[in-house]
Amino acid sequence: MIHIARSIAVLTAVLLFSASAVHAAPDIVPGMWEITTQVNMPGMPMAMPKNTMKRCLDSKDVVPTTSTEQEGCTVKDMKVSGNTVTWTIHCETQGMVSTSKGSVTYRGTSFSGTATITMTGEMGAQNMTQTMEGKRIGKCTQ
Image (cartoon, rainbow, N blue to C red; front, side):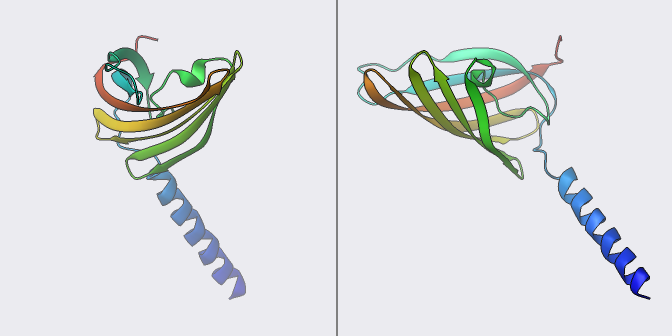
């Protein structure tokens, strides 16, 4: 009887873990994505221009940034809650240290979100905010 109860408990735990693992990925259609960002820096006399890039994204790679590809950058504290992904990226390059805390919400073939960025270096600290919008534009060519 004890063995049956243990087996049921283990099976229940496995099913619960499997169900949570299935729901751990946001609603994202894998493929090539066009990502448009705009940085806002307080005190700047004019708005910075928008920047558009293309990047392959899928359920295993859901942080829509190129910062992680730069030397000296690491993603920390990435979490998925429903369709929302949050993260912290820490970079140390050429005497500059930057920390970016971001969040995007996926909706199948699109997403939107923001990031706050703090950079410190020789000229002191600078805070910025970044808005992000993305849309799937096709299959990855890689």
